[in-house]
Length: 381
Image 1 (cartoon, rainbow, N blue to C red):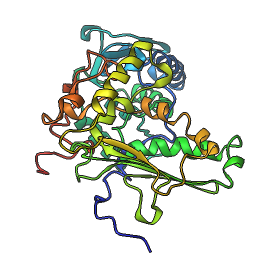
Image 2: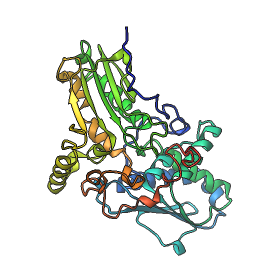
Image 3: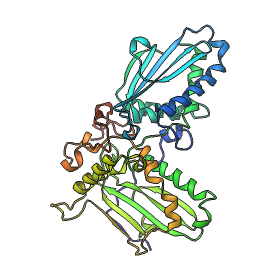
Image 4: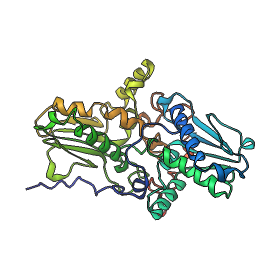
């Protein structure tokens, strides 16, 4: 009989959202507005414009630019990424870089993670009501600077929708750390690898339950006070990936990481394969300071254990997990709880060089007004 665990908080919000429903399948392979993304967009826009060449013949040249603030630090691009495009009849130009508002017919500035998630919303084949709800949520979460307007030209709008839908499957989402939507990326990575011919045979006899659970979650990301985290159950090759605490019926975990949410965030965003030696040193120094035993509790803020006593993860499953940290880090948004909570402990509040660029500007996010689901925070109390 499952035992009661009164410390478990209510099921977190966001397991099924309009944003997830409106997004393209998969988790993308290109970071929004990166050089690789722009190269792919160049090809996609040329194809989209070619489909509407005749109808675009009477359209005046159109130039637009998107500027995304707070891109991930591993891209080494400072505090902003930008790209621009020009459509002149059948001629298309797409380049990296920023244009001044005077050079554009339409120029949009916003927060990179919000723009990334908006860029994954598809039009073709999606429920328009769901798409509208997802777009409304995205619109609330960033501060936007917009100059100019989109012409009321049907063929031009169709070509730009074609570009958008072509890039949606390629664009990486950037979700808030350890939220249910973030876990959807973990689910994709692990289930796809476990089902592949390379790993499936080795998992046929593996039974193992992995769990990470984080308490003291920020209200802007967990408005119902739920714990963050995720769990993975491998049962003879069948993989389940869930968000939040491990359900009582699956306990005890074979490997459990449990602790406070805030100190883990900077380390949880590191793309280890791309870190420089100074960044590795900075991470080690941060971890030593942030994870030391707390004077008020006498405990470390994060601990690892094997409640079942089974011990280490089987190597067959560990190989499936191997790229998970870096793949999720690339798809994790850059805010810190300290950006929206003045009570955060000093050791956990300062932005770290290995985690965020010095030019990172939290004011582009509106999490002081809305939670990540777009619901007003003040109205919710």
